[in-house]
Length: 244
Image (cartoon, rainbow, N blue to C red):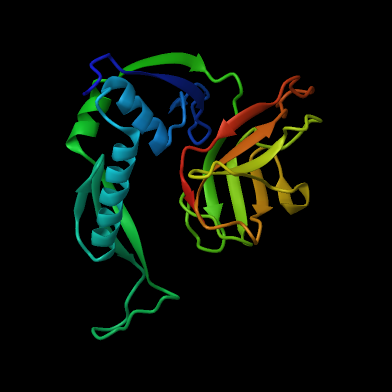
């Protein structure tokens, strides 16, 4: 069932501002598409006409439910593309310390499978030079939880650190967006929720009624380091999935 065509990715370069060398760059893989489970099922059916989308969906849902139950119960599970197990955050004081939800929390640790690591090793890479937009978010900091690039807290503050991320220009598309990964529902951050709006730092308040889920954050802006704004807005999508 595997597709034997050679896989390839495109890498764009960005200024690496944390070093002394002015010509230092870092690379970022350009996201070619964003796929959901149903998209993967449709691809599988197109390669194997004897497979039913309904059967595939039912099988995936059953296996996913079982995997979640086992991981939540303390099992180490190999499922899909990786290995999953629980880790503990927070410090315990004394040999007989108790669990305190205000201090301690459980998190899922994931590691890529050997098959996925091998596929990445054999991927062809095309470096096409400097990014035309220059927009980059280096770090998203959730003020309430203190976590970076992992979480959003409804009603809490968020700091974005990067380059050329200031929301500027008269395009109706300019702004900050949160896209729920399962429903694809898009939430736009209101202009009144912006606290700081600078080229290297943008701070905002997450909507207090934002539903729980997994989100991706994107910024659209016409900001330019030069005297004139960009004619057309450009969009940057943060690589990380953010959990609310």
